[in-house]
Length: 374
Image (cartoon, rainbow, N blue to C red):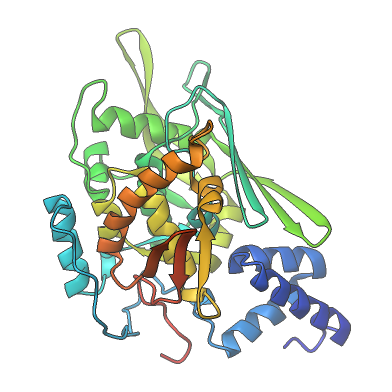
């Protein structure tokens, strides 16, 4: 541990690390909070301790490094023959081979716990809460060459897929500046989406959602004992687009996005590797994507024999759009539908539906992490 760090500060930092871990605060968020409370050297001490303990949560595999950790083989659940054929095909690929190269994508640990909006809404602000951590998303605006144009909140599967791809490109290129690609159609194919035109086609949806994502602003909230912390920031701080005049409207086609330094640096240190094949298989449901990302981030770092996420907790975390007297019941019905799809593409997830909620046991991550010394 750093020699210049006094023993009292170091111990206080380690005590906070233990407390945050007990409260299931994501490792990345915990480390950032420790640095803010006790300084960078204390954060380095905690990080070094994690490495010494070979904690896989801090050793996300580099996109440029081969996977070297083999997962233990065990009996996997049978894929439901009633699931869509395309999803069954992805499930077979995932069972037969580890993800390699372009199969590996990355998501920020926060957005694995607390997702973006799932449905279109006229609201310009939405928030989610999970285990003392909260995220608030505010809609923003973009300059179209003549005026600022208000954007809606990003929603649905598109922003999740777009972020996974942009995150991965940024980490591979070791740069916060990402070129979207030679064309929108080429980028759509990397998301597993067939390019199509029209008002409701994939071209239009891609353009709308990447613009909304570029314009939105995030606010994070944390609770630690009797203190509440607020952190504000952008995911994307720069957005470059071609502008054209069509049918009397100003059109913007994205060319380059620039992640904020804070987001990029935090992503580089705490990226959660995910299997892009699974995201492609689940692209028809934002709820399924959120469920997969949550399990990917959480299962491999569980401690103890098991934990249970109760239905009201899952509803608060993933189902804010379900309201009214039957909100939790309606959310549960939809969640159980997508859970079958998620389990098919994450077969090693040791999960079970119980009367009070979802039982989780420690499981290998879908993408093996690179453990120190491997």
